[in-house]
Amino acid sequence: MVNDITEAYTTAKNSVERGNYGRGIQIFEAIQARYPFSDLSRQIQLELMYAYYRSGRKEQAIEAADTFMRENPIHPRVDYALYIKGLAYYEASPGILERWFNKDVTKRPPMDIELAYSSLRQLVERYPASQYSPDAEKRLVAIKNRLADYENHVADYYLRRGAYVAALNRAKAALELYNGATGNARSLRIMAAAYEELGMTDLAADTRRVLQSNFPGDS
Image (tube, rainbow, N blue to C red):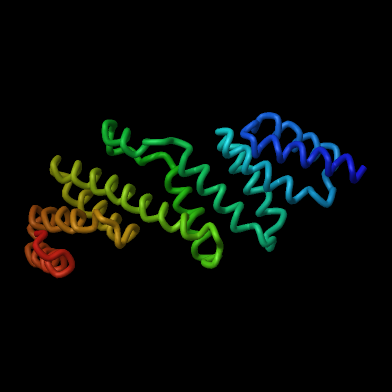
């Protein structure tokens, strides 16, 4: 039995490495179904989540990653499962944020990109020494900037329509949630404008001072 499992595992792994994800997945799934408690079971779970992700089966990759982490919470490869989960969410809807700008900006965006942010942030915070953390950090910066831009776009939408409190709250949220994003200056400008329109001149002046202090020349 051991030889059969090992041979099948090797065949599946070679198939995935050659880009034949469908065949690799089929064999891995068959091994798991027939020998659910084999010594290779955990490794096959990891192989499957990768193959699902690379073949575009993002939902199955996420489910496989969640299952692995739930069943093996202290396994040394939990960082990898978090990474694959984050990538799957990150790439689930390519360009989705850009498309939102042409739709009703009063609606909340889909959760995929925020779930990608959550998964990758967990990876970086829990496993800073992981080999996957540097790439996760780069993706986190990109996600943070894009989400901040979206929040600012919504805040500006409210500002231009006279919904000053809503604009203020949205711009504040962008600053608090995505501190350090490239859109922080725009958030402060929107806040200052909203305060001014609400007659809160002192707060508007304070906000502009913060803007000038942190972003010299951008007021």
